[in-house]
Length: 133
Image (cartoon, rainbow, N blue to C red; front, side, top):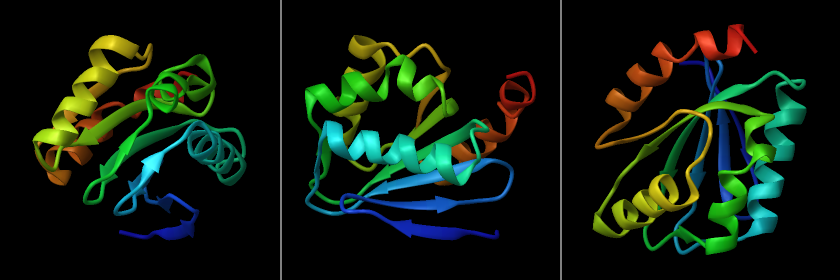
């Protein structure tokens, strides 16, 4: 798997093959609106405006503020992302991810997964969303 990693304050962003971008929230991060803006801007710049398929993982004791979750599910994210696959590490991440999906209701396809393998498989099945955008 070819990848290039961009290190940001709260996130390590890996540009993977097949249009997948992997956002890993570092340990002990409370992701803010600024962090999500930086993520979206970096994806847009690195992919030259072409949408990506987002794989999200989080380190120990990391989560997003309510405002950051709202931004992550907004139309701003839809400009650079075609689908989100969120890997759940523990019960805390499951609660946060469920709030994102059920309360914030992103318009793009978003699924929760127990592991990276199943998340990557599903993202591969969403590739048509990029080709049609």
